[in-house]
Structure formats: structure tokens, C-alpha cells
Amino acid sequence: MPTTPQIPTNAPFNEAQRLWLNGYIAGIISQSATERSSQESEKKKTKKRIPIVFASQSGNSQSLAEQFGNELENTGFEAPVYGAEEFEDFDLTNEEFLLLISSTWGDGDPPDNAVDFWNHITSEDHPRLEKLQYSVLGLGDKNYLHFCAMGEKFDSRLKELGAKRLTPRGECDVDYEETAENWFNGVLKKLDTPIKKETSKVNTDAYSKKNPFSAKVLLNKNLNEQESQKQTHHIEFDLSGSNLSYEAGDVLGIYPTNDPELIDELITNLNFDPDELVDDKKLKEILLYDFDIRNLTKDFVLAWLDKSSSESLGQTIKNTSLEEYITGREIIDLIVDYPVIFSEPKQFLSLLRKLSPRLYSISSSPNANIDKVHITVAKVSYESHGRSRNGVCSAYLADRCRKNDTTNVFLQSSKHFKLPQDSSIPIIMVGPGTGIAPFRAFLQEREFLKSSGKSWLFFGNPHEGTDFLYKQELMDFQNKGILSKLSTAWSRDQENKIYVQDVMAQEGKEIWSWLNEGAYFYVCGDAKYMAKDVDSCLHEIIEEHGKVNSESYIKEMKKEKRYQRDVY
Ligand SMILES: Cc1cc2nc3c(=O)[nH]c(=O)nc-3n(C[C@H](O)[C@H](O)[C@H](O)COP(=O)(O)O)c2cc1C
Image (tube, rainbow, N blue to C red; front, side, top):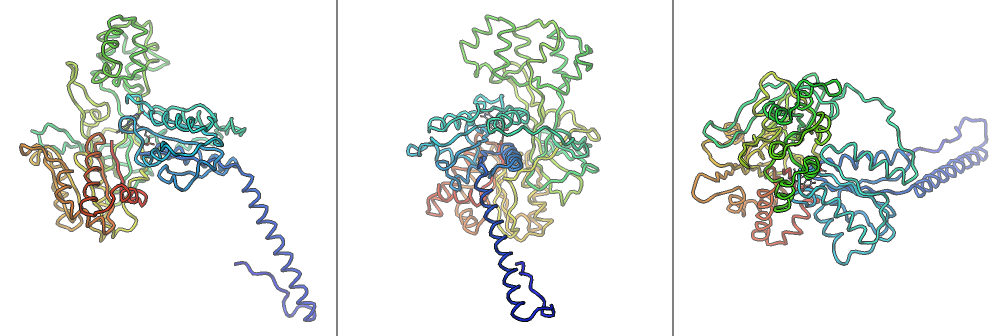
């Protein structure tokens, strides 16, 4: 604490004068301190408060909320940023403004951190919000049928509760940055705040999503045995010279290129010249790097219907539905089945979406792999409507990304998926298939940290003989005591299918005892079935073995960040 200056005892004053002067100085100082603090609190009071709430699973909405929060604070607002799970920490009935940024998951569902908030805000007795002015930004992906559904639902519900829209809702597709920026500028305008011009030049030295690093492939090997139905690739990239850093639990963004065979087929069917220049770039190069030439969206089908004027396409969509038509089909199906003549490639290109990067959970610890990053990728390939199909990025990585090639990459932090700070805390990890990726990173990290905490991995795949990913490494972790327990589920090695949740149920008593010791519970992998089944199994275990209400127990776990999911 600062001390008040005193007149020294050797100063040319008698004792009475010295005491009087000391009192006088102390009085002046305390008065100006009081004035200063009341000015500060006055200033704080006059600052407009604009809370930003994010509903986010993989961190995109959270990053935007934090970025916009900073920008608002720098422009003189008070802009606290809340995760939707913290809804008990703010009171919408008392707020004048709200910015809500929400992604959509599952089949039009809220992200994990917003499930309780959504239930709360849609409860019948939720108070009216007549005082509130708000704007919603939805994040999503047009490949999903319920595009930005949660953005729309939050927007409608707030309106229904009497709140007033400050600006129209924004809806972002995968390439979300520009739309999000425009939405935010609209909000600033409405708040009578000058829109910040981009003054600082982009630091071209810093690698990021906008400026990816060209990383050399050090290793690319299939982890499944030859006879397996699956192909899961372990890929190592060299990050040396990039200055990029990451933590166990983070994700790696990959910019794929398109399949050259598909490009040829497309160009042939559209009667284009592959070497034709479009804005000084060869068409075949543009189709290789710049656009998504595979995934069909509703917008594309409707535009194609318009361009082709095909009665038969119109009838097909009418007979089934747009959703049904899209399922299992790709852009090439429309091109072949309902030909359109374009006078120039630009007309066709204008219908396409940008080729966006894909995110993969990192399977390495940076401390155990200096200047390297590993990912674990299952090649997506299947047959539908008489054609064999491949995933854009997984096929690029599995088939065309060879040792010593380079790939454009960037790192993205996963704030919601991290090891406990205290390394003595036990962890339970459920990661079948490629869901094992972040847990390999966790185990490497715990080995590096010489952590004393117990760890338990649930892993599964179709066959033990051909699909036991990282088998030797897991055995070594067990032998060294880093992995305390490994439980496996080989779904097709016996007549009845067995999945990780079935093995969890058998181990229910012990899982409960670990949870009781404060264990963190992690799930990574398939969102559609596995994560849901694991979640209901966890509820059952808590009810049966803990004899407590599983809803409130899990709610508390989520609040304490002891239940974390990285599902896709
Ligand atoms: C398993 C899964 C399900 C998804 N479901 C939808 C959906 O139904 N509708 C949609 O518009 N986007 C959907 N998305 C896309 C996400 O909303 C999109 O990637 C968003 O940018 C994620 O933002 P976040 O990181 O803030 O969660 C889904 C993504 C995944 C991986």
C-alpha cells in the first residue's frame, strides 16, 4: 500500500508545525484519491454494457466472442464475454444489450456448453425481456440440413420473449470470418460507434488460418492392417521454422487440394478447357485449390435447377425432397445427370463455395515431439447412387499427401479440451476409432510431465487383429504405468456387437469410484451415435452406482470442466 509522504524530522520546522504540515498533506492526498476513484466509478457507470454470450463446441464462436469483446472494450464499452454455460452469472432481465454467437451441432442442436442455457431460456416461466436489445450471429455449415438452426432458434426465442432485434441475424457458413465481421460492423453502426478501419498490416511472419504454414510431411502410414475395411493414417508434419506452438488437446487445420480425377471428370462434362485462364489463373489450378467441387448444398441444387430448367430435376426434388435428393449425392451427379451449358467457366465457379480447411484433433504432445505435429485421420470412402465417393480432405491426406510433400497447415487452440492443470487428477478417456487422437497426445504429455494422476482409456474399433490403432504404444504406456487401465471394445469380433459404452457399463462401479475421486471425463470421436450413447451410459452409471441425480451431477461436472467432449 502506498504510504503518505511525511515531513522529515530534520526539516526546519518545530514539532507543532511539522504535525500540522503532515496532516495537511495527508488530507490533500486522500481527497484527490477519493475524487479519482469516484471519477473512475462514474466513468464505469456511464460505459454502455454489452455482454457477449457464446455457444460453442469447437471454439469458433468463442474466438469470435473474445475478439469482438476486445474490440468493444477498446471502443469504450463494457463487454464481458460469457460461455453459455455460465448463464447463471448474468441476468438477461436486467441487461439492456446482448450479443449472442451460437454454432449448431448434431442435427440442428445446441453445442454442449449451451444445452442448459437453451433449456433455461425456453422454459415456460422464463421472464419477459422487453428491455433487451439483441443481435444473434449463427455459425454453421451449409452441408448440414439444419444450417445455422441454433442461431435461428435463439433469435426467434429472444424475439418471442419481447426483446428487440438490434440488427438482423448473421449466418456464417464454414468460411465464417468475413460474414462475422460484417455482422459485427452492423452492430457497431447501430451503437453509433465508428467502424474500425484495418490499420495494422497483417504480420506476414505469423502463420495462421489466413496465412498457413507449408509443412513438410515427415511420415504417413496406415495404422490398420492390410485386410482391414478401414484406413486410418498416422501423419507427422514438420513445424520447424514456423514458430507455431500448440498444446495437447488442440487441433490442426489442413488445407486440402481436390482430387485431380474428379477435376478431369468435371471439366470434361462441362466442356471446359482446363488451361483456360480465369483472372490470370488456369481453370484446372482454380479447381485444384480454390473451390469445393464435391459437397452439394441446397443452394447449389436450386441454382442448378434454375440454370438447367430441367423438368426432370424439378420433378425428382418434388417427388422426394431437397434433403433426400442431396443425401449421398455430389456436385458431379448434377453435372452428369442434368447437363448445363455455361458460356464461360466463371458462371460455373460463381455457384461454388470456397474450399475450406478441415480440422483434426492433434495426436501428439508438443513436449514429446519438438517441432512436430501428428494427426490421426480415417479415410472417408463409400458407395452411393452407383458411384464411389471420398471425403475431400481425408482422401487428400490418405492418398495424395506423401512423405516430403508439403501441406498448408495452421493451429487452432481447443480451450474446451484440455488436461487438468493438476496432473495428479485421474482422467477417464473414451476415444474409439480416430477418437484416440487427443488421448495419445494426453498420454505423451502426462509421461513428459511425470504426472502421478491415474488414467483410463476406453478404445474400440471393429477388429482387434486389424484395427488396434497404436497398439504397441498403448502397451508401452501401460507397462510404464502412464496408462493405468485400458478397456477395449472390438465391435465385430463376436456375434453381438460390443461398443465402448457397453464396456463402460460393465465397469460402471469403478468408473463411479474414479469420478468420486474427482476424475475428469473426456469423450472424443463420432458425435451422431457414440457420444450420445456414452453420455446416456454415463448418466446410468451415476444413477446406479452413485445413487445421485445424474442430471445435476453432470451439470456440476460440466461447470467444473470435468466433462469435456471433442466430437464430430
Ligand atoms: C458433428 C457436427 C455436427 C454439425 N451440425 C451442424 C448442423 O446441424 N447445422 C449447421 O449449420 N452446422 C453444423 N455443424 C457445423 C458447425 O456448426 C460449424 O463447424 C461451426 O463453425 C462450429 O462452431 P464452434 O466451433 O463455435 O462450435 C456441425 C459440425 C459438426 C462437426
